[in-house]
Length: 99
Image 1 (cartoon, rainbow, N blue to C red):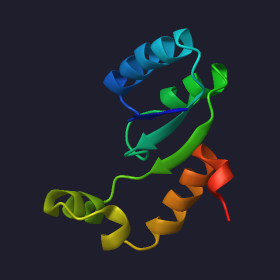
Image 2: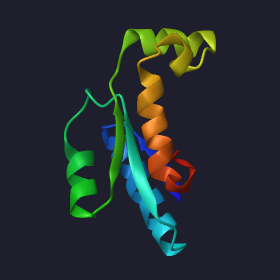
Image 3: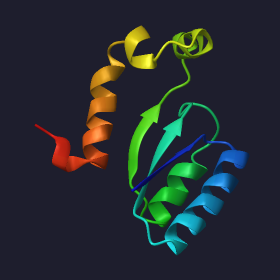
């Protein structure tokens, strides 16, 4: 499984399209995580819907996320409410690991 991470920007959409094309040629299942999901426009969502690509998670742009990242601290340690969201994402990617 290939998790593609993108942002809702023209460059993000362009890179996503290239990555999707490559991953599909390799016949690997895929899904998308949108980072900084509250910026830009809706074209990434529209593309995923049109191409029937599962949208697995969205992460909004938040200052506290940027601060954690700049300190090298994992997001789930700095902002514990994200732990469940990432666990849910993990189980979508590896359902056999769910207890």
